[in-house]
Length: 444
Image (tube, rainbow, N blue to C red; front, side, top):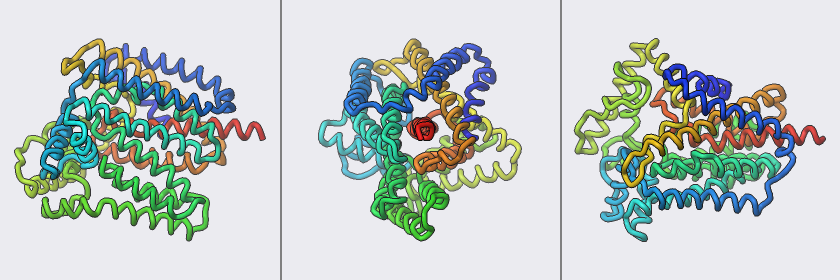
C-alpha cells in the first residue's frame, strides 16, 4: 500500500540522513493528524458552507500574492531558464529551438508578457490564476463521488496546505498549471462514466494540455485505460470513453509534435528532456536524484540535442540492464526522496535573490510538519478502504490509479519531493472521500 510505504519513508529519512531534529516535524505532524482523525466523524458530517470556501480560497490566494510582493524572490535554475525562454517567445513570437522544457508554461508566460511586460513579478503573480483554477477543479472532483462535503473539505485543506501557498515563491514553471489540469481531467473522466462521451473528450483535451505542461502526463492514456477498465459500467461504454479520451489527447499533442519533427528531425512528443533526465538518475555516479553528468555537453543545434538525448537514454538503459542490483538500490532511494520529504524546495526560497536561512528553516519546518500529518491521515483512510473496499467510489479509483502509475515513473526517472506535490490535492480528495463515505454508511 503506497500510503504506508510513504509513511515509512517519512519516518526513515531523518535517521538515514543523520538528522535527529528531522523527527520534530514528524512528531508535530503526528499530533495534528491524530487530532484531525479523532474529529473525522464531525467534519465528515458537516459540509463547509459556500461562503467559507470562497473566503478561504481568496485568503489563500491573497497570502500568495502578499508573500510575493513582500519577499520579491528571484527565480533560480529551471524556473529562471523557463522565464528567459518565455521572454524570448514574447519578443520574437517563436519558441526557442532547443526544446528542453515543456512548452505550456512558456506560452502562458509569453502571452502575459506581451500584455503586461516581461517582469519576473508578472510571471510569479500569474501562477495565482491556475492556483485558483485548481481549487475550483478540486471541488468538482471531490464532489463527483456523490457528496459535496468531500469536495468542500478537500478545497479547505488544499487552500490551507502550506506547500500550496509557499511553493509559488520558487516561481514554479509547471506545478500550478499542471496540477490544475490533472485534477480537471480527473473530474471530467469520472463524470464521463455516467455523464456521456463529451466529458471523455474534455478529459482528453485537458490531459493533453497537462502533458504539454509536464511530460510525465504522457502516461495519461494508460491512466485512463486502467481507470475505465476497472470502472463499473458496460464494457462498450468504457471502451468508447477510453477511445474518445485517447483520440482527443493525441489531437492536442499533434501540432506541437509536428513542430518538433520539423525542428529536431525526429519524433519528440513534448520535449527533449527525457533522455537527459533518465541518464541523470541512472548512471554509475548517480545517487537517484539530479546529477549534472547528463548536462555536461555543449548543445547549440536542435538536431544534435535530440541525438544526444537519445544517446543518453541508451546509456541509461544499458546501465539499468547491466547493473540491476544497483538500479534497484537507486529505485529505492528515488522512492525515499520522492515521498519522504517536502522540505527540499526551501533551499530555493530567497529574498530579492538572497538566500536567507531563517526562511528556509521556517518554511521547511512548516511544510514537513504538514506533509507528515497528511501521510498519516492518508494511511489511516486507506486502511479503512482496505477493510471495506465497497467504499471505493470512482473519484477514489481515479486517484488510486494516478498514485500508483506516477509513483512507478519516479522510481525510474529522477526522484525528488517536487514530484509528489501535484498528487497532494488528490491525496486530500482521497482522504475526504474516505471519511465522508464512512460517515454516510454510518448514517444509513
